[in-house]
Structure formats: C-alpha cells, structure tokens
Image 1 (cartoon, helix red, strand yellow):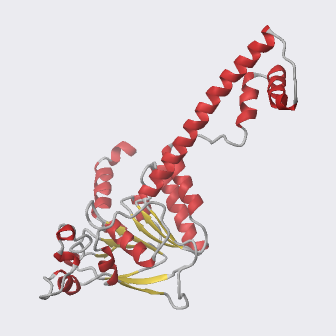
Image 2 (cartoon, one colour; image 1 turned 90 degrees about the vertical axis):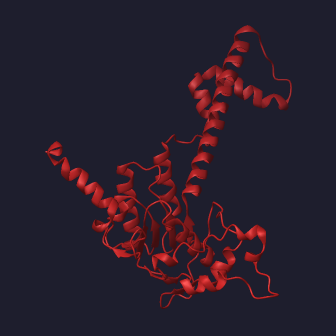
Image 3 (tube, helix red, strand yellow; image 1 turned 180 degrees about the vertical axis):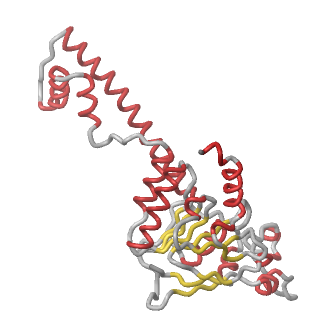
Length: 302
C-alpha cells in the first residue's frame, strides 16, 4: 500500500534566500545570536542535489554516519506530524525549514491513516530501559516474597497465631499458603500477572517492532536493525515485507543492514552518492564490501 507519494526538500535557492542576511530593519531568527550558531537542518541536502523524493511501498535511505538519512526521516515525520514516542532533538529554526518542505499524497489518499508513526532507535532504547526497570522491580519483589515465606514459616514453627478480626484475613491466607505449599509455589502465586518473560535486548527490540506496527498505516523506521542479531534482522526483513505486501503498510526506512536493504521491491536512495540517487542494493558500497570479504574467503565456506 502507498499513502505518501512524494516529499520535496528545500532547494539550494530556497535555503540561500533564507540564510542570506536580512533586509535593513527586518530581524530574523538568524540575526539573533542564540540562533546563529545552529542552522540545522539547513545546509545538509543541497550539495547532494537531492530535492524531490518519490516513494514506493518500501523506501530506504542508505548512507554513512552524517549522511542525513535519519534527518530526512525526522523532517518528514515532523512535517506530517506523525506520532513518536521519543522527542526529536530539533533546532530553533526547524519550523522555518519545515515551511519550505512540501509533500503529496497518493491519489485517493487525502490524509494519512490513524496510527501512522515514526519509530526511532531512541524510542526502542527507552522501551528496553522500561522493561529492564520493570524486571528489576519484579526481582526485588521476588526477593521480598522469599524472605516473607521464610519469616512466616519460622513463625508457624515457633509459635501459634490466632485470627482476631477480619482485618487479619489476609495474614491468615498467607499463612495457609505457606503451610500448604512450597516456597516456589508461594512466590509464583504472588507474582502471577506481573511476571515478564526475560528476553535479550535484541528479542525485546524485535518484539517492539512487531507489536508497534499494525495494518494500514505509514511507518518511518530509523535504523531498526540496532540490537538485532543477523537472524533477527532476517526475521524483521520478512515481517516488514509482509507488512507492506499483505497488510497495507507503507514503510520508509533508514538502515545499513544488508538484510533490510535486500528486501524485495525496496526503492533505495543512496545518500553517499554524488549526486545522491536511487541505486540497486547490490551497487551500494557497504554491500560490495561484504561481497568482497566473503568472496575472498570463499574456500572457508566450502
């Protein structure tokens, strides 16, 4: 499925007109000292001679560090006002930059569907930290229950206890559980409903994407391969292919991953090119480096 048809970045002329000194008597943000030192994202794309971006159901931005692939995703997301879980570290003049950007939807799509969002590596990282904090809290609760069991078991052995009022009902119930069950059963019963399955960071990150991405929406994914093993990257690539092919999703992705770059039907913008432009995945510099490495050591695989 396709919702976003194209996105137009400011041209060199557009940026030059904005960045030129203001007319006499007219004060702009760039004339103010607090803004003059930060012109982001101006100046990133004009020299790449990349202005109008045309999208497919799966479109990928590829490039090295500092190539601007994450910036493009964030600019598109801010212009379209997409949902995000992690804040965008923008500049004071980002709104002026966004005003120079344009976009168009596909025929018959006057607006983006609900649920459309940008998923960044910061958002995934925050999710992983949340899981870690929850699990640490559960671990502390488990340790406390183990101590509680031992304490009650000791009281049952050393002295009697009588229920004096309904206020003591919960204590009676705990004592009966200790009397009838093992320590592990007591802890498991008390933790039921709060236990998190323990996953690696990669497994948790993969689950984040599969839970977050739903049918019939536009998703921007910033380097989703972070934290994922090669196997999980392959599984993510298959999941994303299926989401675009069968479940009405449009995906715009920034990535270095050869597994994601090789997705069938993906349109790839090489931001390292001069000029930047569309390439096949097998033409990309990083992919050629992988190929040369494995080819030079082919005998080790035979």
